Length: 118
Image 1 (cartoon, rainbow, N blue to C red):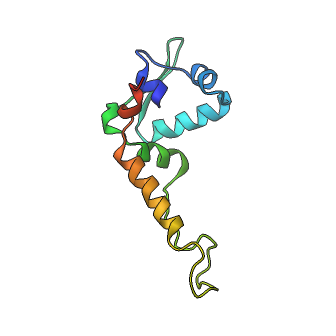
Image 2 (cartoon, one colour; image 1 turned 90 degrees about the vertical axis):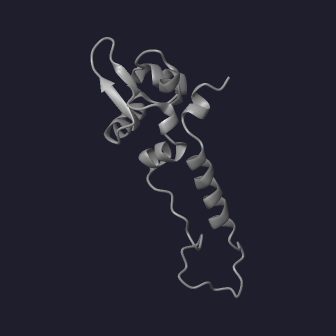
């Protein structure tokens, strides 16, 4: 998404795969997901590729992450135990607190914050 936001013209799957070191097939699947979720517009043809559907300032990192990987959930127990076998949780609320910090960070930052960073 950063590469697309920075580009003056459409960026195709081959360019994205080469720039990121990812497989062309993986990049194509991710791009399809982002098109489906209305972050990108896809165009076919020799000059085809992807470009943003809306301004980078209106797209949060959280929206991008959740489009690709699904919603981030805050788990109460990292071991998925409905009842803690200990009197006091060994992790405290660490996992939930860190997850909440990650969500907050991704929510506060937009694509624009990284698209023009030098």
